[in-house]
Amino acid sequence: MDVIDRLQKRAIGKGDLGIEEGLALFEEGMGRPFRLMAAASEIRRHFKGDTIGLCGIVNAKSGRCPENCAFCAQSSHYATEAETYPLKKAPEIVAAAERARRDGAEMFGVVTSGKRIRTAREWAEIRKAVGGIRDLGLMPCASLGLLDAGQARDLKDAGLFRYHHNLETSRSYFPQICTTHDYEEDVETIRAAKGAGLSVCAGGLIGLGEGITHRIELALTLRQLDVDSVPINILHPVKGTPLGGSRPLPPLEILVSIAVFRFLLPDRDLRLCGGKERNLRQLLPMAFVAGCNALMTGNYLTTSGRVSSLDHEMIADLGLLPVRELDLCRCGMATADGMPGCCGTDAPRRSQKRKTDRIA
Image (cartoon, rainbow, N blue to C red; front, top):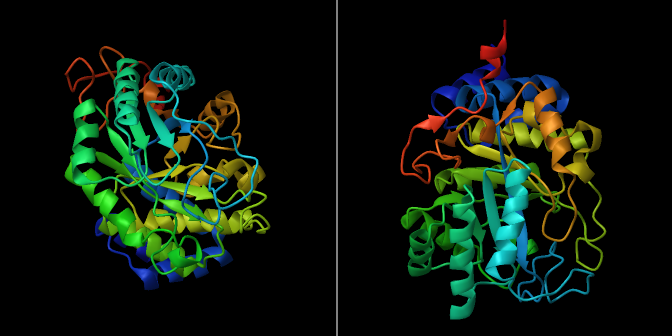
C-alpha cells in the first residue's frame, strides 16, 4: 500500500493526520498530482456525497478598514481603487440575497469592512437584513469582524445561521500579513461564535508568500477549532497593497494544496472562493476532484467573479448536483445539519431526484 492509499484510509477512519503526514502528501502530490486528487475526491465523496453547496455574498460596507492586512483592497493603509461606502440598508442587502437565491445559492453572507461593528444603528440594520434573508428561504451568514460572546448570541437570536471569520493564514505566518491585531483575537471570535451555537465558516488565503507548512498549520488549527466550513481563497493581487506584485501560484500547486486540506479536514466543507478563476484558469473544475464540495458563486467583495450559470454548468458536467436541488424544506427553505426549515420541520422536500435515480 503506497503512502497515498495508507493516508487516505487513515483520513477516512481516524481523521487524525498531522504535519508530517501533510508534508508527505504534498511531496507525493507534487510528483503525482492526479493520483493525490483522485484519492482526495474519494474522501470528499465518502463524507459529502455528490452535492456541491453554493453561497453568495454582498459587500455591505466597503473600505476605510483600520487593519493593515497586506492583501486587502479595503485597508485604509493602502491607496487602492476599492469603493468606499457606509453600511447598506437592509432592503438593498436582501435584494442582493434574492439575486443569489435565483442563482441557486442556499446560503448568503453579509460582509462588512472594519475591525468590528460598533454602532447600535448598524447592528439594528444587520439584524433586519438577517431576518429578510431568512424570509427568502436562505440560510443567513455574516462576516462582521471581531465578535464577543454577547454579540454572537445577539446574532443567533436574530436568526443568523453561520458566522464567517477567516484566520487568513497560520499563526506563525500571520505577523507577515497583519500587525494591527493579534491572531488570538480571531481565534476568540471563532470560539465566541461556536459558543453561541452558530455554525462557523473560517479559512484563509493561499499564495500570500507562505509555504506548505503554513498551509498545513492553518488546516490543523481549523480542525482544532472544529469549524464547519473552510473557505479556500487564492490571492488576487491588488495594486497598491504590499502583495500587489505577487506572482501567482502554479495551478497544480493550488490543487495539490486543496487535496492536502481534504486529507487533513476529511469531514468538513471545503469551499472554493475568491481568486479561483484567475488562479486556476482552465483547471478550475479540478478543484472539486481535488476535494472541494462547496463554492462561492457570483461576485466577491472588490473583484468580479463569473456568471452563476457557468458554475451550474460546471457542476452538472462533473456529474454533481447543487445542494439546493436536493435538500429543501417543504416550504422551500434550504436545510442544514442542526437547522430545521423555516416551517419548523426537519423533513426535506426532494425537488430533484439524485442522479443515481435517473439511470434507466
